[in-house]
Image 1 (cartoon, rainbow, N blue to C red):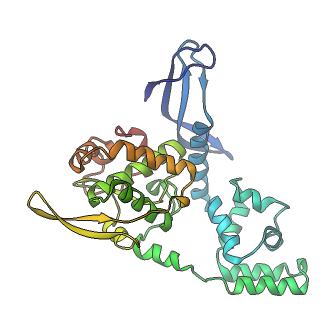
Image 2 (spheres, rainbow, N blue to C red):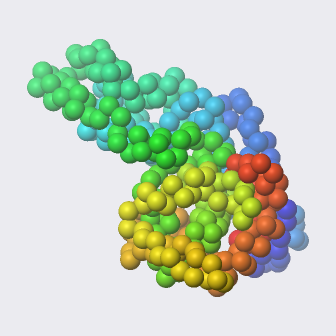
Image 3 (tube, rainbow, N blue to C red):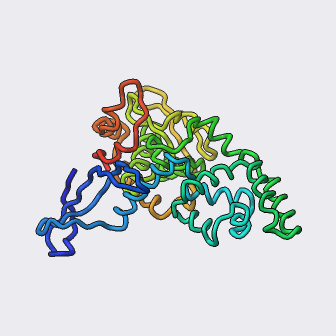
Amino acid sequence: MEKYINIKSPFTGGKVKEVCTVEEHEFRKERFSVHVRYYVCEDTGERFTTTEQDELLFNELYSQYRVNHGIPFPEEIKGIRLRYGLNYQQITKILGFGANQYAQYEKGQMPSESNGKLLSAAMNRQFMLHLLEDSRAEFDEAEYNKVHQSILVSEAKPENEVQKRLIYRDIRRSIYNGFGQLNIEKVSEMAKFFICKEGGLFPTKLNKEMFYADFLHYKLHGQSISGLQYQAIQYGPVPVHYDTVYDNIEGISKEIVVAHDMESTKLRCDSCNTNVFSEQELKTLGDVLAKIQPMSTQEVIERSHEEDAWKHYREGNQIIPYSEAFTMRLV
C-alpha cells in the first residue's frame, strides 16, 4: 500500500510517498514476516525511515520472537523484580546475570533464549526461592534473610492476574491482542477517557473507539495499548466480552435513555486518569477521538463495516488479528 504524504525528500526536497508492506526479516537465524513502513523519494527512488517506523519493525519482530521462545516482555521482566521487592544487585545475584544485564532487559534488550526461559521460570515464587538458596553464598546472612522474606511474602498469584483470567480468559500475548500485555488499568482508563471526552457514550460507539485506538497504535508502534482482543459482530468490531469488561470498571455508571422509541444504556463517568498512558498512547487516543467524536453512532457503525477487519471476520464472530490494522481506512 502506498500513499503520498506532506513531507519533503531529505535528498532532493521533492515529493515523498509512504509505503506500507510486509517483508521477511532475520533475527537470530530465524525468519519472521513483519509489517514495515518507510518513505521513498520520488526523484531518486531512495528509501528512508523515521525512528517511529523503525520502532514498528523491531517491536513486531521482537514480539514474535519473544512469543515463539517464551521470553518475557520488558514490562514483565520489570514486574518480576518489583513483585519480589528486589533491587538490581539482588536479583542479578540470584539469577547469575552479568552486571547491569537485568536493567538492560527491563529497557528492552533481548535476553538469550536460556536467560529468557530462566526469567519465565522466575515468575514462580517457589522456583525463585530455590534459586535464592542456590545463590546463598552471594549474600551475607542479614541480606539473605531480608531477601528470603521479601520473596516469601510476595503474592503467589497477584489479585489482578486472577481478575484477568476470570474476565478476559485468554491473556497470552499474540497477534490477536496486538502483542500487548493485558493491562486492566489501561483498559479502564481508556474506556473512561472516551466516555469523559464524549460527555457520555453508548457502548456501541465506545467499542469502535476502543478498537480504532488499539489497532491504530499497533499500526504505528507494533503493540496495542490495552492488550484486548476484538471480534467482528453484527454492529462492527468490539472488545471480546465487552459487556463484562465495562461492568467491571469502577467509576462508570449506566443511564437508561430513550432514543428512537427504544430504551438504551448510556455510559457515563466523571473523570479519567491519563497518567497511566505513555505520551505515544495518549496521542493515539487523542487522534482517534478527533476523528470519531463528530460522528454519530450509526455513522461509526457504517464506517467500521467498510474495514477488512470486520468484513473478513464477521462470519462466526471471529477474533480479529491486529495485522488488519494496516488495512484500516477510517484512521
